[in-house]
Each structure stands twice: as structure tokens, then as C-alpha cells.
Image (cartoon, rainbow, N blue to C red; front, side, top):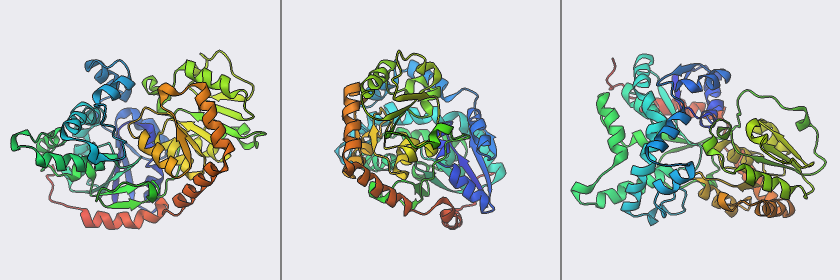
Length: 437
């Protein structure tokens, strides 16, 4: 069969799907990967065939332009002002949210962000899908251009999650509250946006444009949210792009190895850097007194701004996490899919310091499993980071909790083991009643 993967141009989101794409390719299926032109090097670097669609404007340029247009001076201000104080997408109970909060959240954050990520790709992606005629479209969970392309050509389609399924849970609450509103006040900016694209390309709106026919979930089952949707469980296999293992990684550390990493996205998108240079310096100074080997990944231009690098610290621009994490005793990260899922896979106790909307629910899941801690970025002083690492390293229950999660991860089927399920789902949901040029 023909399988089309789609992703907005975010490396870590695309990397989340690479092992599955190769499992399908190795099973004999045709695979293409469509995204904005800036992702083409990452796609071809993974050995897969790219289909560039949309404008050459980069994601960072689109994001910063949108922030300027809406008078946001920082990504933190964007997240806190665009979402009302009670509306945290990662909060534990979606049914605590009322209609005004959800509508404001959709109008001010969810849909504008989705437009930034998707709008420029839709027209060309639909044209490609109607020409290539895929049997199955697999789309990163916020890359709705993929669901539109699938509906336009009649293909079965599924989301590939990178985190907890907060979007589906919040959408369920939104639709329930929408039905309770007076008939003239049932606004829905998500349906208006996706419905507008559907009307342009001559097919009807369906809620599957927001949820897919099914969803591939790579989190342990104990972390999952109840949404009523159909899920296909798959083990997370770390992929970090073309990379090499430095020689120092193969040497067993003389002291516990601790990692501080801030994600691939922060290398190219400065507004996503969760800690300031001053905060990083404060943390390094505090951690200098611990008997650890500290590895810090920072862009070279940021590392050059540090005043001091302690003797127990190594600052590098990049190390593939799947090579480094198995050697680590604890990790601080910003709750991105690579750092979070990779740490689960390798049983590393985690310290989350993040601005991402899904970070609170990730942190609570870790804490319930006894496998991690969290600190809000504004409170991430060197002293607090040191205290957290001392707990993670000194209390063996954190390693036990992390190992329990690792065993749960390893019980999930590998990508190669879900290929047959995807073949069946493509046959079950495939439709050939779409408008095709």
C-alpha cells in the first residue's frame, strides 16, 4: 500500500514517526513524507522520500510573525495571555473547564497555533494526495493538513501522538459544552477553520479531521487519558536524526552522569529556550559541588555566553539522546517528546522544567509513578535544581519507578509489529468517494 506521513516542520515531531515509517518501508510499502520545505533535509537525512509542500517561510518566522501581530513579546507571554488562567491544556480534569474558558482557549491559542503550523501546506498537500492516492495517511497529532489531505483523497488516516492526548480530551469537553449553548452562540473556531478548508476542496467537514480514524499512542498505557477514541499502542523507538556517538560517551563515568538538555527545537528557535543563560549559569555553579558528571547541551552561541564551566561539567551542542540516556542517572529536560519518551525508554529519573502546555500532566504522571519531579521555569534557581537532583540521585525509589515504566514501555509492540494492524485499518477506513482531480 501507499502510506503518506505528514508533519508540520518541527524536527522532533517528525522524528517521532521515523521508526514507524521505516517499519512500513521495510515491510514493502511505499512511503512518502510531506512537510514544509524547511523539513526536507531532516526527511531525506532519515533516508525517506520528501514531498515539500507550502511556503518557504520557516516555522520560527511564522511563529514570531504571529506573536508580533498579536502583541506577544515572548512565548511565555503568548502561552499565559492567550490561554486564560484556569485553562491549562495539561490540567488533570478537563471537566473543570467552562464554556467561556474553552472558547477563549480555542480562539486565542489552539486554532491560531494550528494555523501557523498547517495553513501554508494544505493546498499543495491536497493536490499531491489526490495525485498519488495514498491508502493511508499518518499525521503528527497537530499536523491537521494531513487529515485534510486524507479526507480529500479518500484515504484512511490516523494521528501519531507525541504526548498525552490532551487535544482529544479537551475537544470532547468543548463539544459537550457547545451543545449546551443557545443555538446562535455555538461557536467553534476549530470547525470553522477545518470546515473552511474542507469546503474549498469540496468534501464535508467531519470530526475525524480533528481526531483521525484512529490514533497511534506511544505512551505507556498507565499514562493514557480516557477519550473514547480508538487507539493503537506502539512502543516509542528513539530517533534523533543523523548523528554519531562521541568517544567520551562510551567511557563509564567515574561519578553519576546527569544530563541537562533543552531539546532540538531550542537550537534553532531561541524563543523556546526555557532557561535564561543566567539561570543555566546559576545551576552549573550550584551543581559544581556535587559528585556528578554533568552534561549540558546548549547551542554553541549560548554556551559561549557562560562565564564559568565547572570541572565536573561538559557543555556540548548536541549528543543523540538514545546514545547518551542509557548512561545517565538523572535528566533535566523541557518535556519535549524526545527527552520525555526517551527517558521513559531508558529508565532515567526525570526533572521537568518546561513552558509547554502538556508539561503539567507529564509531571503529574511521573510523580504518580515515582519516577520524576518538576520545577516551574520561573522558580528554577540553581539551588532548587540541585535539591531536585540530590533527591533523584539519592532516593533509589526514583530509579525503581523509572524502571517500572521502562518495563511497561517494553511490553508495547514495536513499530514492525503494528504494520499488520495498519494494513487492516487502511482497509477498514479507506474510502474512495472523495473528489479527485
